[in-house]
Length: 499
Image (cartoon, rainbow, N blue to C red):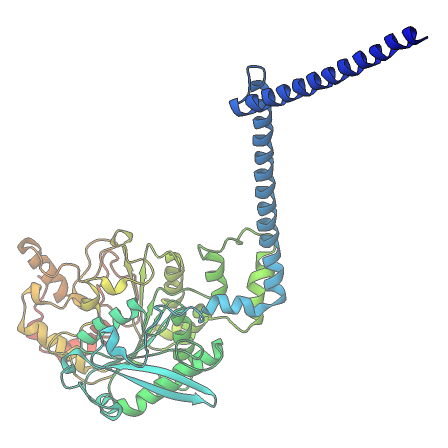
């Protein structure tokens, strides 16, 4: 029995020993396998793995592309939705459209003190504040003629007000939308007008600049009327001209129509870059991206009318009885040139202008004056400046004193080169009046013969620069159309027969 049991025990021991050795070998094999995988991971993909990595990279690229397309599609849908929603928003809230027309919240240039016009290079300018209505205050600048700039240093408001009674004419300037009376192009125009001997009075409408109030067409017109009456109360018999630019032309025609209805018209009206009415301007505006939108009139133009905004220049000019001068650049990107020409075509045959001059002066697109740089034109001083012997002569439009003075001027200087530009005949269509300050000798005799012919009959109007027409200029606004009586009262010996 003992012998049979011993082999069994030995067999069990051998099996135990072999089991422990096999477990050790398995653990060793597992450790070796782990080290091999770690080495392969550190070494990078093996020759069998590049295709799998490329597939994974392609999937990631496609995922990014799909995400970008989704984002672009989402942005496009938002833009289209906003584009469609804006017309309904404006229709429901007409006040938004009024804000976009006035743009009084855009104060350019920024960070200027309107109480100190000297900071803008206007050393002969005084800042006032007028109150046309309760809770309404207007900021006003008064620039005296440049020849007085030394005397104006350190003077108070009373001195500036008394200066309006001097012999120099006065221009009331009505600026357009956006910005303030301290805008760069406006300041440059003040300087030009001041250098030509004009007082320049300008102001910010209620809601613009440092003026207090809520803007509206009626309120803007009343502000202009208040400032005009304030000027007339201090200027005596000095000529007062009204100059409107862009949206200010709508205020200017509203004002002048009201003045003519009460029989106190200004001496002349000057419109720079005018439009016919605000509906046509909104429809023709180059930034009007909705002009082809279905129901454009209902969505956009009707809310303007319902807000009480019309600025109907085309209707106002039919009720204006004073001389009219229109300036417009052919390359105007804001108010299309054809609107200014259309306004002239409406005004010229109007019965209200039968005793007054209507002139339209275009500026070629090559000059680059666009919407607000006509002040750069070298012709502007010739258009607006009085000849030396006429400057300072008091008299209203239609009086004979300025005309007789011009005739004396021509009598003393029969040289065509000294003839004031506004009396020179334009030779070619589109010529800018007064462009030739010196004529070649070969043209002098022919031009002088033209000047010796009798002037146009009363009530005639025409496009400046038209062939056979009479060139216009600053004093043409002061001259009565019917110069024949002045002509006959002057020395006939000065006007020999054309033969």
